[in-house]
Image (cartoon, rainbow, N blue to C red):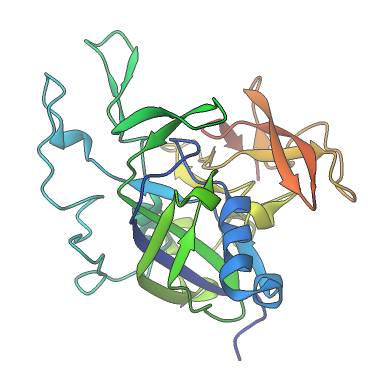
Length: 288
């Protein structure tokens, strides 16, 4: 018997039109609203979690010292990519496999002459519309995201980001892959059940608004000293959304002397809501 909310479905796809929005990731709330638009509110409500979307465009190895690209139709870490993204030559049986697939290092940014300044290489241009508004169009390539629920939702075509009513952000699902969260091999953590449960929580998200892609993290080994918690999406500690809780500190298993914070805005039910987050990329020492 499969437990409620334990089926993870990873979706892969490609953009059919330029995209307007963050060039770093597609927010889980944007994907959630797109699922509502595509399949209706009842299907979206059946989901426990909608992750943020990860761009897969250009491997750092495909960029030479002059910033020129040599794209060879393989996106991330050896997973075959062509017109369709396929898992036929891979399996997803271990905790590490899942994060190998989700791994990304903002591949459209590169260090400039070793001085840590970044230069954007994702193709984009600025346009102006009749109202006089200017905005950036990004030519994103491929994207992956995942959902957690009691079944796989049949998704075919979606739209992400801003300016969707102008045709931007059109996205076609090319592949999907489902597995049970509890069936992953967590042997990398030994028999420490608390550590294993923490790892599962990192996939499904913790604290406020995890359903919208917030609070995702992975556990990284830290030599003989233990484990590190590495945020892969912002962790919302407080927000103006009705019913949200306030957390003065992150969860008890996260320890750090300092970490970056920022605020985000979401459009929910016809109004702007503010979210106060620990920024993604922060690393904490896991304390068991």
